[in-house]
Image (tube, rainbow, N blue to C red; front, side):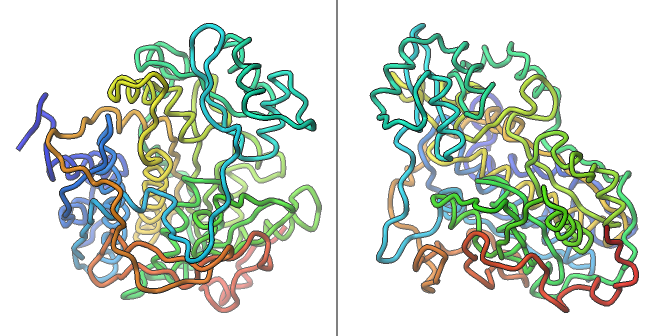
Length: 497
């Protein structure tokens, strides 16, 4: 069944979106002379659920399709070891819930957002949105507005300052400092913008599977029921796409160690950013901190980061050095606005990308509103995170079969281009605000007791669950769990600097 314009409708839409995502991950190709291949893994995916969130964009189907990519990658990894084709099932309604902050607090309230974050009208009749949940962003944005970051200010003062500035000029002024902002553009304006043109030429997932170094150990294999057990993931990301990716790697048994600079914290993101992980701090500007980080890198399997170009190079850890330090390394890197063009190093978030690329303007027209309308879930953040997890797992499958490491690059802007090409089918039932089915377990988290929705993703024979609820920032020592990895048996092969 197809909808208007030849686009698939109903359950076919999620399946069609998954097909495009799986192809972008290279999943339609054979992974070697094995009985299992990427196409077979993708063929075993099934979707359930009929209701969807109302939106100009097919966010519910997209959430389900991106989670299906994670499931297909897990199924492929398991099948590469035992020759089977585990079935993958995704509940579309629950997938939508897992693209929200997710945890339901029990007996306490989560921290609030910055009162300054949001969209403001400019002098020339445009809208600009600021992201000011971090102190550094807030200070930089207030300074660009001519307001004293150290003085008491309120949202009205910010609005008055914005109303005296033209949108494009203010966007550039904020970006030149430490703030984060985006002007509301239409899709047509984004298509003509230098960054919009650059992203249009980039793939949804860019993979380099030929240049990585060979893994010397060759002893790891997925365990039945816990396929990522024995895999170590070094997480150098911030909310939300990167932490989402590593959260899903943890759900299949990987040991995830998140590294932050001393003093770092993001209270509103804690339950998403740290769930299932150990969290430590290191100062890479010190000799000791850099040595400890390098040791972690030499002993990990997957590195996930969102650094801007050249950041790691300044510490003597350029891509080639990283691959040599950890033969067989699988590296997944994320950016907001893409990998080419003038904004490749610009700070960005899901909400800002939606403003810049025309999605918020399209939402405003669709809703008949007079202010920009964002999607009802942060689909770019969570969807990109799911794809990053799938890329990492596909990298493990390749390494298992060939011994070769790989690198994978994704961006919120490229994900937005993919999602924008699909419209939700007419006549879908409104998912509404009903409470989703919850896991009966009450967990102790870094902030307080929580409950989670039931998992939306099921891979036959490999149940998804988390061994830990997640640490507070900086509460773990900067080392891997002893005895948990094949590298512990091969200390003579580990290169330390």
